[in-house]
Length: 400
Image (tube, rainbow, N blue to C red; front, side, top):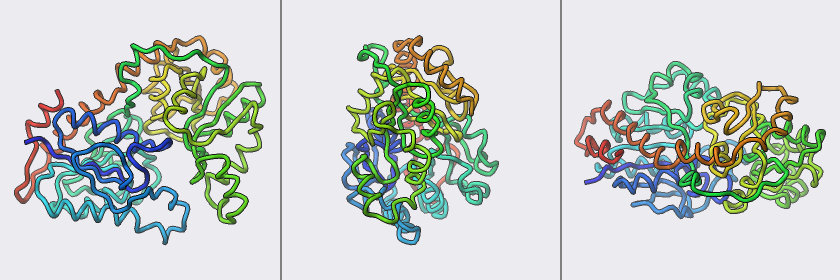
């Protein structure tokens, strides 16, 4: 019998997502590779997810991401209800070998509290580990919950209590990296792109301001709070008095929109996969003027796979993902003049070198092999108190 893994993607977005959705894109890349290696995958997600899995669990049919704009007392039960369904499933059967959880805080908290009533858990840390100091600073997996980072840098700055539960890190992957070195991309156009949710941590205000001042064409692509299109945002601002309470909407209005003229600097909203890939593949560079320690960098590996070099601040995971001078150019955080200078040099870098690096390092197959090794580490380090199937050598065989 094959290894059986329950992968908890959470209730926020479908898998795969329609446009923005970093975690859900990673789950969508991982699951097919695990199944190709004989792993039986039970996917906990929303009903509208279209990714094929051996079994699917859900509480909500529709994505709950837009609910995050509502007051906390209206939202707090959403993730808990989702994990409650996961726990009910785990308690009703004894054939799940391991839970691979991707739900921030609520996942490890509830699964950890369940103790030996549930299988061993690997919880992937996709986010800023400074956000919840009381939770992460006193984290106790009770011998059942292990964690992994999405970069070495992320774990280096994790609280001691959380780092003590780590089994390593796995860099993120994208299906776009498959055979990327065998493809040729479209011709390059004279613009740069910032891809991702419009939020202070991503630094869109720096890119927009400098592009407008220096005469560089720039496209911003990604949602603003719950708004996926310029039209939806304008309707929200015009009709919803609560819209500007969302921090990302305030950031847009106060710091980014003043530099967006619709010609030199444009915001195109959250694009579908084909339009997003075309936009990035034709860009001379993707720009990452990060104002935080980016943990994983989904957009970074997607850019490389599409043959577009990266220009950004030397912080977070970027130095791990970028071969400076070959696949990108990095500068010290806050040095906006150097950032602009690198943008003007980005066309000197080879698209083929970017695609080759992606094909070697960031394919779903590479990520799946690494996760299977971590599954084996987690299973070897836990001993169920009651009879359960344990993957054992099946994990190692699948990793080959």
